[in-house]
Amino acid sequence: MGRIYESLIARGKPRHCLFDSGAQNTYIVAEVARDLPRWKMTVPFRSALGGRVRRIREMCGLSARLQGRPIETDAFILPKLGADEKGRPIEVLFGALARQRWGIGLVPKEERLDLTHYPKEFVEF
Image 1 (cartoon, rainbow, N blue to C red):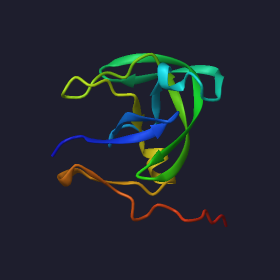
Image 2: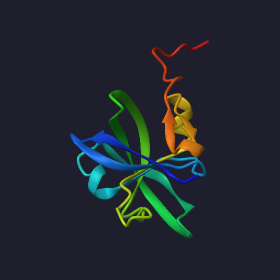
Image 3: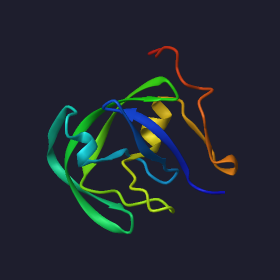
């Protein structure tokens, strides 16, 4: 069992994305967020991520494609997210809140995503 990585297409390029079972929020590196709609947070907050506490001051709107399907979510911007086991820089860390919204399940034993619950429409009651 390992971590689940999948490419997202964001800003027209494949981005190395970790689908993290332990992260609630979605994070993106500043380089990828450069041309995305950004906003400063009213109140910066701290997040314990990658073994250290980071102060987050800015967010962006992430528009991407995952296995050909559109994904829209907000993401907290950080200078770096770290690297995977092979030393490749992680560009997006996709958290539980966005996975829940888009019906993205994790299959850790097979190190793959399950998109069987990807919504065809959103129904609000």
